[in-house]
Image 1: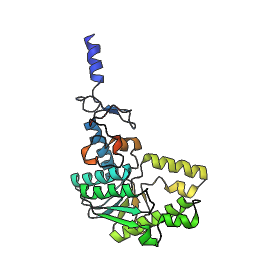
Image 2: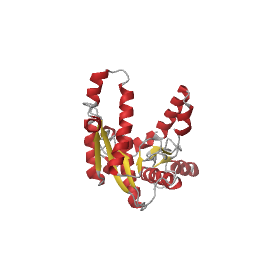
Image 3: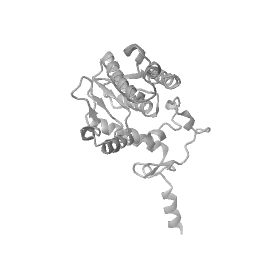
Image 4: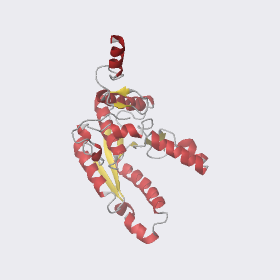
Length: 254
C-alpha cells in the first residue's frame, strides 16, 4: 500500500522537475508540468527554433509586427527576453499598423504603446491615412462592405513592408503560430492553390524581396501562447487581461 501511495504521490508532481505540483497539461506534449517549468520549456523551445533555423544574425535590426493581440504581445516579450538572455545582438523594434477602423484598433494600439514602455522597445506606427490618404472607414464608405477584408489585407501587408523599410530593418518577425499555419494549409488545399501551399509552411518567406519575414512561433501552439501570460506579471497589460484569475493563481489547464 505504501508503494502504491508513493507512486500516486509522485504521479502528482511535475513531470519535468518532480518537485512541484503540476499546473497544466501541455497541449503539445500532454506532459503535466508546473508553472515554472512551463515558462522555461516554452521559452527554450522558441530559442531552439531561432537557433536551429538561423532566423537572425548578430547586429541585425528586427521589426516585430505588433497588433496588441496575444500572439504579437507574447512574441515581443519573449524576443526581448531571449535577445538579452542569449546575447543575440539584435536591435528590436515594434511595428504597428493603424488601419483607421473606429472601435477596432484603438484599444490594441494603446496596448502596444504600453508594451513600448514596458519592454523598452522603440515603436513605429504607420497608418493607412498617412500611407494611402484614406482610412479603412473611408474606403468602406466608398466601396461598401463587400470585399473590404480583401482590400484591408492587401493594404496591411504593404503597410508593414513600408513601415519596415522606414525602420531600415533586416527582417520582420510575425506572431504566426502553428495553428495559423495549419489553417492556411487547409485553406490553400480547399482552394487548390498549389503555389501558396508550397511556401505557406516556410519559417522564412520573402527572401527574394527587400525585407524577409520570419515566424519564431511556427511550432508553438496557440493554446500555449494563451496560457503563457497567465499570472505572469510582466505581461499583465495584455489586451486579453480578462483571462487572469482574480487571485493571481493559475488553475489546472488541459
